[in-house]
Amino acid sequence: MSKIKVGIVGATGYTALEVARLLTAHPQAELVAATSRADDGRSLAEIHPSLAGRCDVPIEVLDPESIAKKCDVVMCCLPHGASAETVHALVQHDVRVIDFSADFRLSSLDVYEKWYDVKHPWPERVGKTVYGMPEFFAKQIATADVVANPGCYPTSAILPLAPLVQAGLIDTDDIIIDSKSGVSGAGRSAKVATLYCETNESISAYAVGSHRHGPEINDLVGRISGKPVQTLFTPHLTPMDRGILSTIYVRRGQHSADEMMQCWRDQYASSAFVNPVDHLPATKHVAGTNFVQMTARDCGDRAVLVCAIDNLAKGASGAAIQNMNVMFGLPEVTGLR
Image 1 (tube, one colour):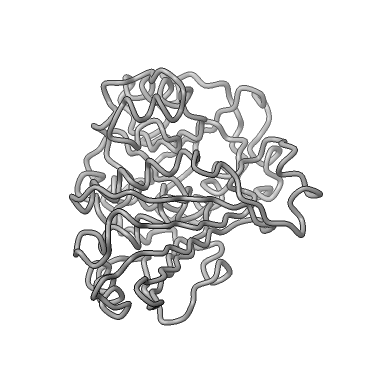
Image 2 (image 1 turned 45 degrees about the horizontal axis):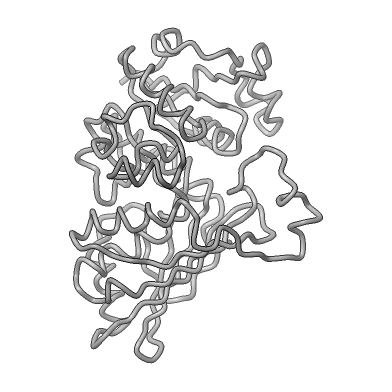
């Protein structure tokens, strides 16, 4: 088969860089177009010097019709609100889209507009767009015109929680999620809170009780398991480039951590990337990969679940490549090992 032609909209950020990096090693895909409002006329390697000698695609101003003619699929790496408008325009020109924003992840328009404080530019598609987690939605992803790429924190919580909730192994109304992320999760634009002197040798909680990934976790765990859940989610910023470690506290009733591990082994037996492990996962164990490591431990009447992912890989760009592979009938691991 001919190579999949890929475009990136919003090419300046870390997720766009990670997509480009992964595509340089993908045997069946080729990056052919990239757009940025501020960098028209430059090359992708000028914006991301680590791509020098590997990816010299010129940057252009977005014209949905023009990029659709060049591409089989477009990775849309724009902020919420702006992304939905662009995705809508691209789909009108018959190109498939993987959207990195939160614009199509949630089931409810009201929940989206409450948490993101914007009017949705394409409200008809909210709740009707497949969530890009092939571990649960591969069949729908295969034929989708738009795929909502998952959030990074939600990935590290949904994968361990959904099977356990579905199997009835944990309480659904007492779930505490403590997540720690590398600084790349905050994006590439300059912010005081992510300056070196602010983050080095420090760890801090943020958006306590108000982080937008909380509703996404509740929505998707409920959607997958068929049972409503309530979680208490707190994110933390840690002084590392990349990675997420989520430590999740659940009430286990009469069920043991060994039962939870077996539930995961059964659920993910055919998964290319999700690995229940006996050791305690660390971010370095999965850095730069699309792999997920998770384990469970008994602790009194609770169980402690620990999950590690790379926020730029399985938490963003690696997941997008995995979704692209499913959309075009390739093995999920293509270009990701």
